[in-house]
Length: 188
Image 1 (cartoon, rainbow, N blue to C red):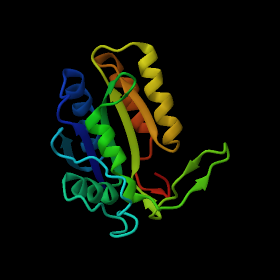
Image 2 (cartoon, rainbow, N blue to C red):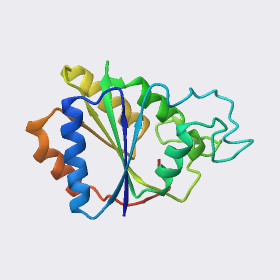
Image 3 (cartoon, one colour):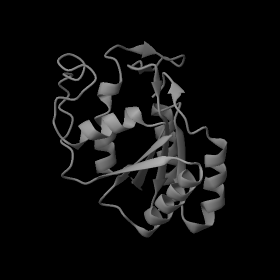
């Protein structure tokens, strides 16, 4: 089994180090091989909105930067941990840029959800199980809830959690134990 941990190079705080260590230890206990990718502000260009990942090079971004490696590692993993600092209730800029650049993993069509919103259908028949875990040193409950609510609304089939630090180790391990860390069928 393969796990991918994607994190923000510019936010390697003490809470991040606790979270990363906790997840890494848990994955080692479960027998996973682990790949780590850290994203810094100069590693990724911004999405151009050109849609060439759908038209010119289906399934692959035409920008040749670290996102090529991330997308390949992502699709070949069984479980992906997206460890993001939460800034004003949202992903950090580096992590948001990475999420925006995952467009090649979807098809260029629209599907209407039961609530009337739209989503791009999956390109592949299976994807790694994606867990998004936010963290921050100083944060108010409203920003934590905003992060969880918005992320769950956009990524409905994704596990979304917030890690506050040392006191929540047991809760996070229990959550990971209840989560099937394996490929899932046709969802992003």
